[in-house]
Length: 430
Image (cartoon, rainbow, N blue to C red; front, side):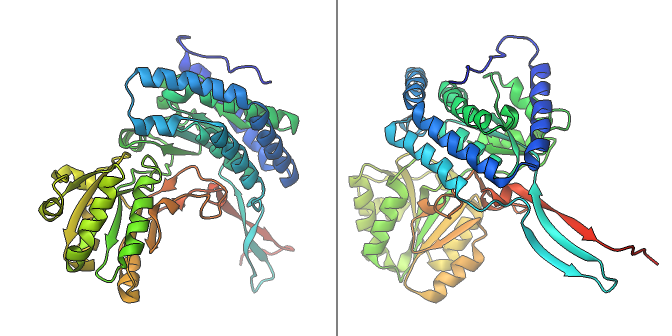
């Protein structure tokens, strides 16, 4: 069993402690970049085994976090994101094993060519270096992010949410055990040992140039702070204001099945649908059954006047509801005049995360897929597929909603960059 992290709470010198974490991460990143794939895979196997072996300790730590969070009056959605049980701990271990089974992206030659002068040039994937991940609530991110960074040859500095401190530390202990037994530097995956927000500020400053990229994973306020204060590149994981548009050519049975799953499977995930748009052409046949189904399933509906008219249980929607990520059993519902109006609504209120169309009209589907500018766009499928595991990435450390470097689920390959290797035999430039 790995010894618990030494807390730096109240030391009065968080800056010095964080600077040391940065230096250790940089040294670990240099060593890891040269580590063979087999050694990284062995560490991942050992990490998964340690998570299973330390299941009782992880669940006990999580129980303490849950008790503290419930006492603070947290919402049911936050509790769901924080809670672990035996199945979820097993899913954490299985997720590490899935990452282990992915192809190693490091050293992959993506392109090569020979110049007329005989020089050969190749583009090869290399690690980004040191990745800082700042996240909230979900303790499984500790394992997902750590495993993905390891697979892609990066050192990770993890700063979990205050509400999941004990859970994250227990999971991190298992990861550290795997690293040590595989002969890799324990500083490959470090967990910031304080709840003090000053540590976040230090990470955003780059830790004396030792952090290469920051990945925020959390609510709007966290991402806004990171984007405003970061002095290093950011893979932004913005809120998921997710839409489903029910086109006039949508089959009602399919629409009901998909919408129910997209909203109620897990209401607290970033791929949960938050706004339902219904084509006015099918409102007489589709709107009432969809709303009744959701209300009967325990979902609060906030609708426009047309939605309110079909069921007395529908609450009036405020303007702010159209741009809100509820992360709860709440859904905004609006009737729109066709696919163009749906696309316009999404462009105005969406967050470029995930949006879907339900239709049997291929032309309408292709128009939606082409014109909705989101990282993930779906046709006839639940928005809860917005997940790196469902993409075959093994896991993810966020859904990037920006346009540079990475977009959509950020998996192992997205955590690499590239360099050019040139081989010659004495060429000089005339």
